[in-house]
Image (cartoon, rainbow over all chains, first blue to last red):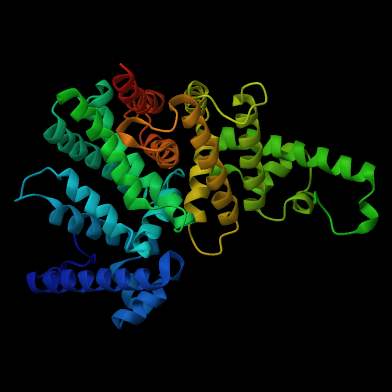
Length: 207
Length: 207
């Protein structure tokens, strides 16, 4: 369900318009986040950007968190969509490295992801379900990626299922270190180093 | 400086008493966090536990964040103190694994660490300096650990300095996944798998 509670509004045209409006708000929120970061991305700032009153914005997104979750969902769809090879369901490992490089160019959205992830570990947080489900899906996708690259047995005797949460952990964990000290932490280089750790064992085993 | 602004208070006895009181508050906060988690650890709950009025508590810790940072500092001192071998400045890798096992038994403090880490990525957050400095120190300690275990060249051609932030990232990143789904994510087993990834390459290189 895209928006609203009233049956009258739910005509096909209304729904389409509502979806377009939502998409426009999410794009604007992404711009505001890029410019001002997590804290600066207030509902008021987003409403102003998109040309709505704050009350009008609340019709589509009743809380800041609901808007931020929509932004992160949109980012995920965009990132994974562009990283999937020919509509397959596996991200190639080299495109994952590109994704980390891309993230290093958008601190605002990485900050938003990391701040919301931090909040979401508290009980009953509205973003909790989003991250729990996201992790489950991302781990499954990552296991498929690793199986595609390395087969059933990885360096160190790891299964793809054991290595998948490690890849995800490295990505998330490096983001926190990078956000705290961008000069000291070369996030893309460190992620490539981790991938080489997976690859090296593999080459050794093959060689 | 331990507390207070008034010179009169800063007698030796007063300072010692103040330090004891602070330590007592930190211990109580740790208990409340263990029982009720990050959100439940309100200043009111901690004041009640330690037998102070909330106003009295504010004398020692003016904000919830300042108290939580003191708790995390205390945890770090305790953990690294107990993990250092004979007063050396290097944590052995096997004790690091034990630390992850220990963390898996204290979700409240892990939740507090992760929630505060998330908040701290926003600009001007009071916990930002704590985490930035902590990361710098932990990465340096970790590089020394890795150099002690593996020498100057690690599996995959990594230097200890490149691998150190990866170990830290895996620890932090796994905590988020674990907090979101403790049944699906066996944090200690996954961390051991990561260590085996470092160790396996090494054995291959040596063998």
